[in-house]
Length: 394
Ligand SMILES: *Cc1c(COP(=O)(O)O)cnc(C)c1O
Image 1 (cartoon, rainbow, N blue to C red):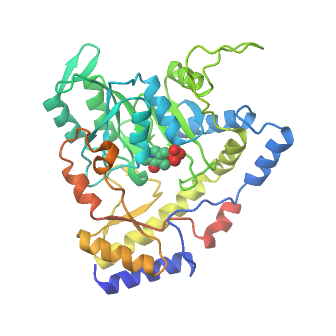
Image 2: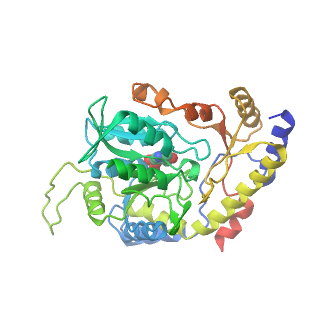
Image 3: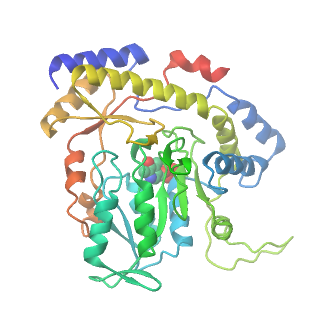
């Protein structure tokens, strides 16, 4: 990218967002957030029992079409429990991607399992079903009860692909590979609330292709509860196990305290869920505004011959975080320096998990595309601009 283009991109961002120095993604509270919070406080239900938690679960379950939803304190906890109910335990291996936020791999570690890193597609930034198939062909053995790693002898208990920046990965193909091998599919849909995939049976929400999926409502996600997460599944039995584990594994009883296993205090408090209910009422408008911001970037990029990381074919992403792909590490570094020096926050994609100290020893397939993208992909400011807040207030 030449200097002139960088300069013009900074101007475009200034036109969108005004002169303030701005973060990549900030929350907006232009709906009924304060009203619902007051209702919680007035009712005294502020903690993990309350009507708003149940209502928020229902809303997410209905919106995604995933049916059963279990609210958690954050997205990492949701992944931890989704892995546990899938049967992940110490000694197991969980297939995931190296190009992800560290929470994905942390959750695998909490379950006592080891991640195995599979390469991503350059077009989706998400796990490549071809790379998955080929790694399994070379390294795994299909037994009656599932898939085993021939090299380590470990069970390949689950596969956790991620919908990067809200761009759907080739999830149907991944689901097919997982089904063939008897591997539980858990979608890390933390970034993809509002992202859909076109299938032969119509549009389907990301997070409805496997055994379960998890979402995050952290402050930087498309909607926020301050901190929060959700496990979504179409399997009622799994949802009950998940709810049980997130609520200290207490055996239901009118007054006695009995717990039948080591559980977790992972249930989302009512106060946070109240925020979530208000935010869900604005999701559709949010998505429209996000798609308009993506349009502006797309147009700019096509005029200036910059690679915009766009919707993969047959998908409708939420455009949570927009990204461009630069031509080299040098060009990327220069771009990051220039934009940040001019008060526009841009940042590189995550360091690959396979290069972090605690996951360095993990198996991987060479990660050719992941390395290539790691050096080139940069996020652009993607918040809803203040000038559009009036649309959220209506
Ligand atoms: C945000 C995020 C999470 C975890 O969410 P928290 O709510 O912050 O715990 C997990 N995976 C990915 C890919 C994320 O972006």
